[in-house]
Length: 165
Image 1 (tube, one colour):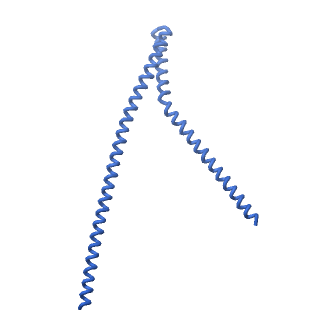
Image 2 (image 1 turned 120 degrees about the vertical axis):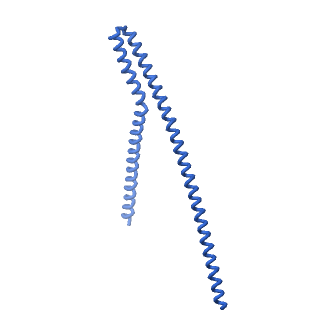
Image 3 (image 1 turned 60 degrees about the vertical axis):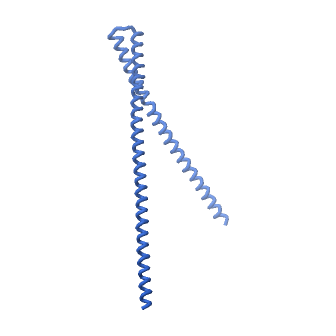
C-alpha cells in the first residue's frame, strides 16, 4: 500500500518541478521581450538626436573644409565658422523638428478628442435607441396583455352565457 502513495508523491513532485520550469521559461521570455522593447524605445528616442548630430557634423565639416581650402581662411577661423554652423544647424533644425512634432501632437490630440466625442454621441444614440426599443417593446407587451385579458373576459362571458342557457 505504501508504493501507490510514494508514486503519487513522486508524480506530484515531478508535476511541481515541471510547473516551476514552465514558469521560469515564461518569465525568461517575458524578460527577453521587455529588453527588446526597451532597446527599441531607446533607439526611437535617440534617433532624432543622432540624426541632428550627424547632419550638423557633416554640414560643419563640409563648411570647414570649404572655408579652409577654397576661401583660404586660417584654420582657427575655419574651425570657428564650422562649429558655429554646426550649432546653428543642430539647434535650429532641432527646434524646427520640435515645433513640427508639437503641431502634429496638437492636431492628433484634436482628432482624438473629436473621435472620442463622436464615439460618445454614438454611444448615447445607441443607448437612446435601446431605451426607445425597450419602451416600444414594453408598450407592445402591454397591448398584447390587454388584448389577451379582453379575449379571456369575452370567453368567460360566453361561457357564462352558455351555462345560463
